[in-house]
Structure formats: structure tokens, C-alpha cells
Image: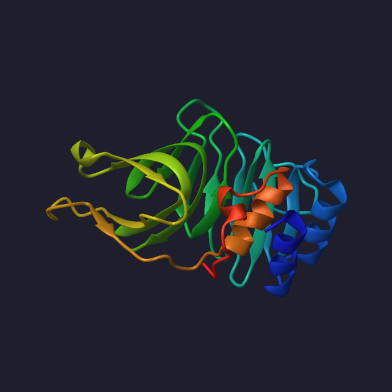
Length: 215
């Protein structure tokens, strides 16, 4: 499956036609960094977000109900869903912190550390989807490698490598459970969305040469 076929599938799913046109026009060159698409209410550091606005270390991105934000930071791209709050620390404590909500991300080269309500995750050049819940966090490593360290049971750390949504997890915050990490199913994110995000940083996802799936 080539690049244009993949983008036609994204368009058929009704995802961000303006961004698709930009990606096709730019070929392998990434489009502009910053906020690329806003739906509904999006705030950056408490102020209304504007398309093209830069997201930098120290910033906080918040989406309102029925809202969504697509943004690019360097070689990383994000789709932040409704009612979500994500912070990008200015110091060396980590690359991002998800306080609440849902976030789909694709990352370029280099090691990064993500802080979730119930875990710390070290990633390198991966795609992943995170969804917070009451007492647990959903984590799907869509492809790549990640080290998952549950907050209540760091001794249960696990290094995960996947090619295509192979090992989604619920990471629980209950220290009385025999295991903090429980296998889950693929939920609430798609290959079309991952392809869109990768296109914004001039890449294709590693599953691009395989049969397209409706995840």
C-alpha cells in the first residue's frame, strides 16, 4: 500500500482533510509545527489556542468537551481528544505528563519519558495511545518498544515490543492487586489516525506495507 492509498483511507474515515492535503503536497517533508487542527475549545496555558500556535516545554494543553487538538512538537505528533489535560515539563523529569483524558502520539528518534496517572513509561521511536480512567490507565503500544513501570508496583516493570497493537494493557493503581498490568483489547484509536500523525512529521507508520486494518 503506497502513501496515496493510505491517505485516501484516512480521507474516507473523515479525518482532517486539510491536513491530508498539506501532507500530500509536502511529500516526505513535515508540515508546520505547533497546533495543526482545533475542534471546539482548546486552551494552551489557559489561553484559547489558535492554529499555528507553538507548543513548547513548560506548556499545558487542555481540550474541552466535544473538542480535539492535533499538534506537532519537533518530530513528535499528537491527537489530544476531548476533556484531556497534557503537560510538557520544562525540566528533565519527563517529556510529557497526562493528567487526565486521552492522547494518541507518534514519536521520532530518541528516548522520552511519559508520566501517566498509574505508571511511568519510557519510549523510543514509537506510536502509542493512552486513556486515563478511575484507578487505571489504558496503554496501547501501537508499534515500537517501551518500558512500563507501574507506580504502585515498580518491581513489575515490563519491556514491551510490538509491531501492530500486539499487547495493549490496563495499568492499575491498586497495590492490593496481584498484578498491576492486565491485558486489554484495542480501543478508541485507529491506524488511519496514526497514519495522519506520522504524515505530519514526514513519516509513514511501520505497518504501512501491510494490509490495512480498521483499528
